[in-house]
Amino acid sequence: MSFFKRGKKEATTDKPVSVPSSKPAAVPKPAAATAMAKKEPVSTKAKATTIRGTSQNAYRVLLKPLVTEKAADLGTHNQYVFMIDPRMNKIEVKKAVRTIYGINPLAVRIITMQGKAVRYGRRYGVTKSWKKAMVTLKAGDKIEVYEGV
Image (cartoon, rainbow, N blue to C red):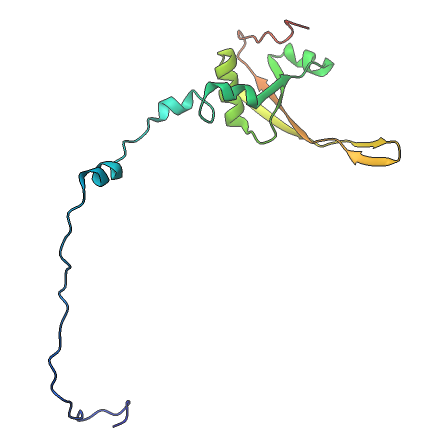
């Protein structure tokens, strides 16, 4: 009989057919496995005050304040300029300023400074690219950047 033909079925031998049960027997789980599966949610308020784990990492975000003539002029407008880690973003810079100085910035602007072409003897090269952040504060807030200068 062809597979595609419809009609009478061919005779088959009658053999007992075993049908598997629909649900396997449930095995009880140990108490330790169920306790590990239930994790309590971590509060988001604890993460808001720290940067990537600890407050010590705030000093890895803000590498140093930039002390230049342009940065000094921006200080009159309540803006401060910092050299930051190239992997950081505005949110982490804002958290770092809040952690280190205890001041909540109004705005953060980030600029990626491209490395400059340099020449050492006959060899040409490029200095590293870096990021700078311009942090704007409220009218009454101040950061003492020029203490040790």
